[in-house]
Length: 184
Image 1 (cartoon, rainbow, N blue to C red):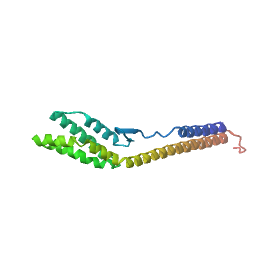
Image 2: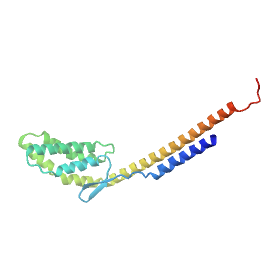
Image 3: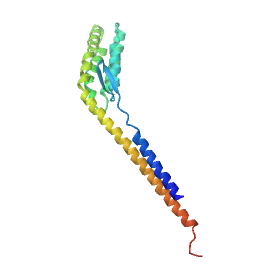
Image 4: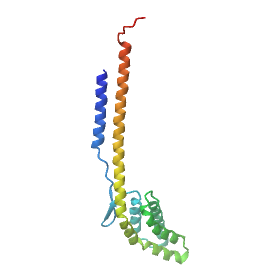
């Protein structure tokens, strides 16, 4: 009985290790930022892509321009607040939009038009950090691989510990039910 349990535990550990080894680490997806520019999808890049999509929408009246500037401000601020600090430079564009939103009267319309004319500069700024984005994506890939290996190691250790516990229980059972030479 102990041998069967041991074989089961070893087989379980092998299955867990091979299934984890066969599962590939998911690749970090590439995101199309603008026409002809695809970058690894690190945190914050989706916010910038959304901002660029919103930026392309035409808006003729003042209220739509305000709404567009607010979307741009929110998205770029969210991207700039990411842990990796790669997108800190886009705060400049967010600040331009915020100042335009805070302006009053004719100055506001002029400031909104000026802020909304900076889309090409944002794309250029994102292109400049493409190397850093690739490095961050590679680090994230390595971290996911290390986590997967650590999970496999923990599963193997748990299976080995379960096997040891089963063997210890079987040894105790044999001593209790077995003949002993001691008489009372």
